[in-house]
Image 1 (spheres, rainbow, N blue to C red):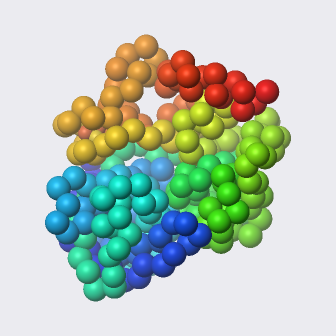
Image 2 (cartoon, rainbow, N blue to C red):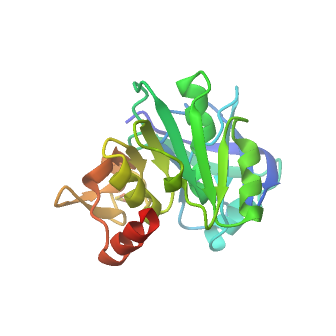
Length: 240
Ligand code: FES
């Protein structure tokens, strides 16, 4: 594990649609492989939260934050000059040795795609899906070739078959993508308290065995994570 823990100074925080893009000085941290993640711990908060690298310009790391509770709210409220504890890179990222890359993101799942597109090079095809026009404003952080769809149009209607899909998004979307593209690489989400295998908060069923997603993932080959029954039915509806 080449992860390090640093106190990083916030350089900028801006609204991107309904999300917040927080930039910090790297302070010696490596950005890692796209799809790996960092644990961010805001001052005064006990539990860190996992975020994949969104952008990695020289000297900086940027993370896209969706405020879903007090922890993410504290991170989104940081201002330039504030300090935040940053630990990473952690977990397994995407394999980049693909011939016809197609990047697929849903909602906050677009977060790793700008850095992923940059590391792949060229102008990979990108499809981003959002549940509202306001959420879709976040597509401004994606390269200009990005195809944007808004619910009720789903990313799975965008002819994904035959491409090397690298995806991140809500679980029903990932299962629907996996059903269409059995070789897809998918970045999964789970509650994470430590990020390095100690708390067992991120256990999911992979290939019939319980595994820690922060150690064995978050990026996994398509069919490996067992869907919950209700989510499987949602996925089936999504591609019907
Ligand atoms: Fe603690 Fe995975 S987040 S074991």
